[in-house]
Length: 125
Image (tube, rainbow, N blue to C red; front, side):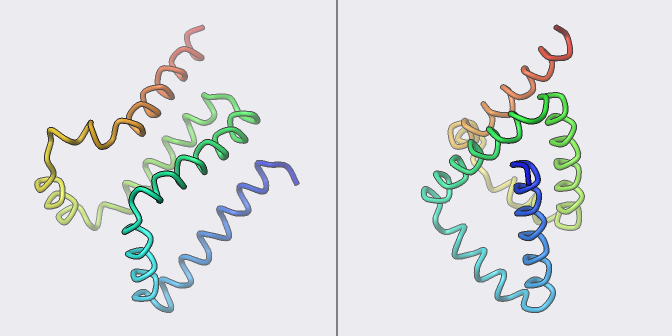
């Protein structure tokens, strides 16, 4: 199995486990999710490490344009998942401090901008 196939298999298994748990014991999943999300700084470090490792294998095997297309697909799928919760999301958004938004989200914003610039560069050059 290639590194991409292993990553895809891990992803598929995690999705199936999550869906089964949510269908059978949704409160159990919410309890798990709550416990995980309470670990903000640790969760940030874990996500950065997993992003770097996954990004390394993905970008070693695909072009940035391929990755961009997959990111678009993923973003649309995530947005579709969030649509039923639009009212609640807007309530949360209205409670955010706009001044601290960039301060708190600088790393992912920087990554998104770097990916966007890299894609445009790859398409133009």
